[in-house]
Structure formats: structure tokens, C-alpha cells
Amino acid sequence: MKKYGKDIILLTFFLCVALICLSCHFFKNGFHSEEDSRTANIYLNGEFIRSVDLNEDISFRIDSPGGFNVITVKDNAIAVTDSDCAGRTCINTGYIHNNTSFIACIPHGLFIRIDSDQAGGDLDAIAY
Image 1 (tube, rainbow, N blue to C red):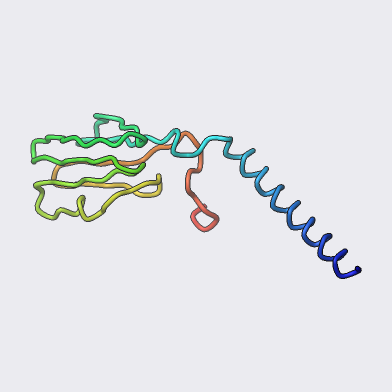
Image 2: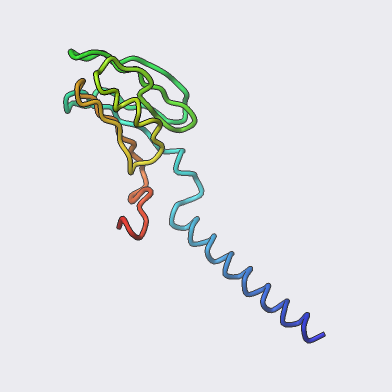
């Protein structure tokens, strides 16, 4: 009987710790997910040209004096999927999904970054 009593106390302790951790998470982040408020901002030659909601899957083309870029939004992430630039580094970057990454096409002057309403975003203890 004593062994079961210790197990119940230990289980209750871990459940309380888990409940406190979940409460702190919801208090800090609110009851909505980060994807609810994420947008990608697109700049061409340093000037803002468009904001894209990452919740809707779309694909569109941006023309610049140096060429074109095809931008695709899919599964809450954004990528340059086609371009006529020489290096094609912007395509090789792949899909980005958080505000710690960006896409840049230097020959065309294109820059894409993800913004979030939540301060701090995806920073961790090391990056902070």
C-alpha cells in the first residue's frame, strides 16, 4: 500500500508541474497559434512592395529590372520557386517558416522576411 501512495504523490507532482508549464505557455503566447498572425513582407531594391498572409497558399511573380522571381506560399511557409538570376541562391534557400530566416535574391534586389505580431518570435536562450 505504501508503494502506491508514493506513486500517486509522484504522479500528482508531475501533473501539477505540467499544468503550470502549460498555463505559463498560454499566458505568455495567448490562446492563438503563431501562424494566425504571421505575414511575409517583400521588398524590392529596399522598398516595401507587398505583404503576404502565410495562411493562404498562393503563387505569384515579381518582375524587377534585372529579371523575375516566382514566389510561392504553401503550408505556412514562403519560398522563391523560380528565378532567372545567375546564382539561383534564392531558390536554393527553400521554404522559410519563421522570423529567424530570410530569402534574398541579390541580382534582382529582392528580400523576403517573415514578421510576427509576437515579440521575440522564435528566439531561444542561445540566440537571446
